[in-house]
Length: 405
Image 1 (tube, rainbow, N blue to C red):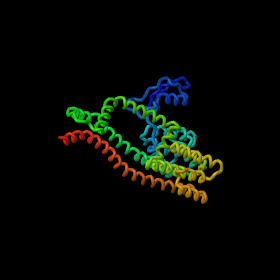
Image 2: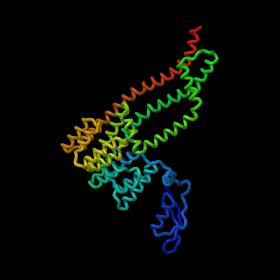
Image 3: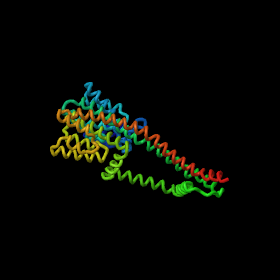
Image 4: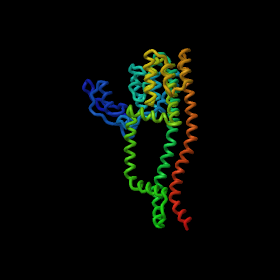
């Protein structure tokens, strides 16, 4: 955003000049035509006024805003709307203080569209980053005249969802990083340290034990073929990553991880916590069960659970209760389905699902603690065992030679 200078011809054929705040020349020309002016010359703002963030957004170089930025925006908007600040004024305040260029531009466009007569939900739907769940809840809030309540619910929901994702990501990242560091340490020993011992063993002429020969052969292989193995692994990882993004590949990948000890439980219960909280928020805001399930399917980042929830939605459309199809999903704990049944009988499904999500969140926290305590010593033992085997294999011929003397 900057002050663009222009020269234009008005309807009377007279020359006009001035400045317009805009992000690019195209926007300046559009504004001028809207004023009934024919642009002749458009000059960009000086380098001192140039906004690099807006330029990056306009040219597609800026990264999209994430859930963290969206949560912060929602909290602040909820506070201002609850305080009685008009929605357009609230958006203008948030626009001025927002640091993320993509979200800043989105807020500006939303404010502009609302000013032209669109609803907030309609304006948000046209901006990337505001998903179906967000827009539908805003729509329900506008329709029911409870936008401040909905925004508060959304802020809590997004905050909880972000914490669950961060916990799962943290649980998955730690062992991967430690394992990679261990792998490079072992690779360095095999490629650079073991060959030094081999030359010493060759000079002594001592017979080589089987374990030592295995380590030497592995060292020779890695020394000769690492230059080919590393690109091959990068290509294989890229292809595998691309495959897991396909519908079939994602289901296979998610199904595999769901069956792993501890990791699988964290993934399942983390996703079920997200599902329960999302469904509770939607139902509590007046969204129909079928529409709420449809939105939950879009928000769940697990191919297996999304597929199973799609089956639940179809059964609900056929006239079944929510509990009946949920009972047939093996990884759904019986306690949860019983709580949902009680909620259906009392007309408080949203409140029951809220409690279910809290139970799952507590269980995810407990599982992450258990996994952290188990994985760390396990990785140390495995890596230590491999390194010890390499060292023993190298020193064993020397011990044998000393014993023979």
